[in-house]
Image (cartoon, rainbow, N blue to C red; front, side, top):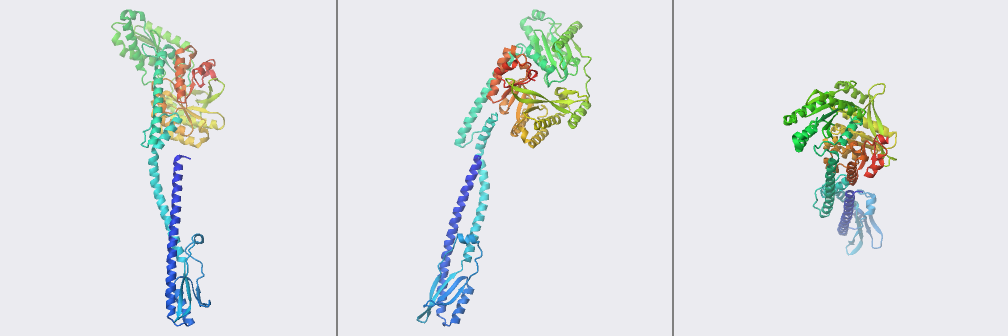
Length: 637
């Protein structure tokens, strides 16, 4: 039972005891007063009637008539005249049951009054003794009515006190609720600060917890900053700040074969024809300045274009991954215009032949060596064309672009017609022996032959058409259906565009409330770029889903590491590290050091760390030593 409920129980018990004590005191006091009044009435009435009878002739009929008249006019239980010899001369008695109060009340609170007595004289002789007792029925009725009125006032007072007490208790316990909320947030791996209350006891507690949270956040931020420096040192070209060769090739490999990547894209290569000649003409510092200018221009060309990334792959070669361009010609032209506008005017008077550009189109699961050879051929053709030129090669077998209207029809029918399916991939523990959960990846049936499109093939177009919300909701429904007929846990992906959709969040919450038994087995994950692009929306979604018992994670983690200080407020259950850090990990000591620090930092917050894109089972022992709790990828399927 909560402290607030216990406090209310104590208040109710105290009020009930106070009412009982006040009721008993009031009733007993009223009974004592009524008994005294009845006692005085009995004595006065007996004296007055005896005096009246003493003055009358002692004719038995007259005496009896006088007694009868008094009995009928008043409210008496009995009137009796007894002779000195003990003979009853006259007697009138009221034998009807008492009304106006329940029997149990009469038995519980009896009213006991001594009858009044007086002597009746006949001249100088004693005629008899008069004894009478007033009727207690009206006393009981008055006592009962008073008790009911007291109870009514107590109820009304209790209601008023309850309303005022509720307000006061809420006001008094607000700091306590804040402290409890902070403790619950910490238990959910959300580290928040609260204002210090004025109550001394709670103020000390809140201050201690705030200091703990502050120290933890400071430690987390310092470690994040240290790891960000290490990450850049390991994976960035120190001169230009672009991705290094190994880091870029890992991204290229993920783009060509990854589950979330599109079916095709373009690879652009920029080459300085003769770096030695550049160094001779410009000198070392001048050559470095030129390379930095090219790096800044290529980095700027990818701003606002999801997935576009530039890297320095050799001393005089830069590569740009362009998944968003529809043709290699378009990608090459874009890079050409960027360099012509931002770099060429400053250097052309000293370096006439500044760059050569080659671009090729790639398709899903294309051999990486073949792709790099093709872009080298495009560069060679560009060199033969002349100074500062570009050459683009679009594959002849590249599929024609599907119109937006056709995509809308296809995706709408897929949602309504059950053409979406889930493929499941295992996520295993570090030793590779135990399953943590299965990742449910959406597939789209495009025809009767069973051709399936991956999420990377159709989700970008769904985002453009604002259709990600119904697709994601259908995926969740498929996962729930599977959970109802199988064991284990399932993780599903939510699109970056979907998490900001208020109607989707309401529909998802309503759906999950219908199936509370599967919520603890259902995991939701969002790509890292979507988390930081819609951070407030993701934070609200994460909190609402965790209240329903679901678990929350971030996939493709590690690309925006400098912003990870925000993650301390999310209460994440797990993160899945980007494959670019995992591929070739055995030969990359720098990434090993970075990932060890990342795992330690995540474990400090109670977050499970999973490696994405594991290529061989031989990497699993190493990943476990680095601190990974789980792994998934081609090497563990």
